[in-house]
Amino acid sequence: MVIGARNGSGLGVLAFLLLGGGAWAQPQCSFNMGPDQVICDGAFATISAPGGYANYLWSTGATGSSISVQTAGTYSCQITYDTGNLVNNGDFSAGNTGFSTFYNYNPNLQQEGNYYIGSNAGQYHPFWQGFGNQFLMVNAGLFQFFWNFWCQTITVCPGQTYTLSYQAANLSDVGPANIQWVIDGAAQPAMQVTGFLGTWNTYTTTWTAGVGQTSADICLRMINTSGVGHDLGIDDISVSAQIVMTDAVDVSVLPVPVVDLGPDISTCAGTPVVLDATTPGALGYLWSTGDRKSVV
Image (tube, rainbow, N blue to C red; front, side):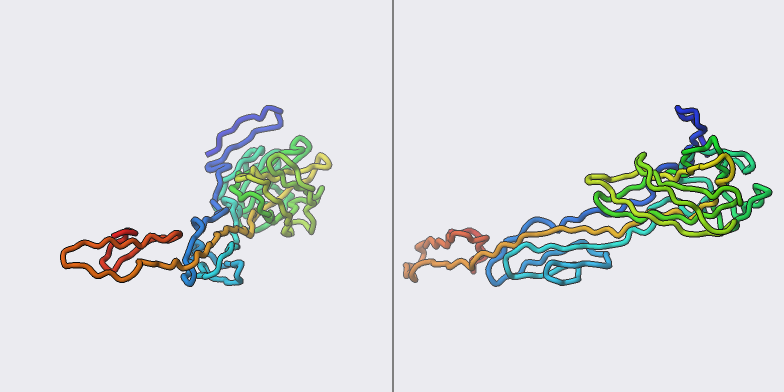
């Protein structure tokens, strides 16, 4: 399903595709090990991080998902994991879906401003060469200067550094393609697609999410330097990161309280006796009778 709307600058049609712009994955950005803990001297505090991750590193040097400690201090845990590819349909195996574009979806790739998804560029343009699995083919001319040919909104974690990559090939022998990543409207340095006609190469850069940032509008833009050429094949678009998360818990250790019930008591049968175990700093009471009050 494609719904077209001409953009305000008159540069062309912005096609919103099925699922276009939607975030494909939800990376975990933080975790919580619970409240600070108070223990008595000689007891153990167990601190647990969420399970299921491959890499844990505690301030103690431990590498499991939980630790048990007896001494006071601040205990932190760092979890590191790989997000995998956060791009929806980055290899175009699902066809023309999951992204937005300024270009027109049309198999007639002799017409500038058109794009199509297929496996053999020569089927759609008599002078093009390029083979692969399903990939995106773009005919960019003079009037497509600064057109975004692929955009998607990606869920990100604040302050984390992401690796952005794609595979690209020049489909014609006139004018190599120049491509920019555009992130939240800010253009990154352009990269020229190199290699012989129809030769695939991988192009990679990095980007760091801002403080408090939870999503990014990420686009690929064609930069034309002349009115001909710039015919591009692109595949395996990827946005990924190694996420590093940290949380900490404070552990306080109280000295074992000294309980003094006073001297032994002798009394007559049937005469009640009050026993007072009130002790400053005590966390709780348990009598041999099962009572849990300080005074029985």
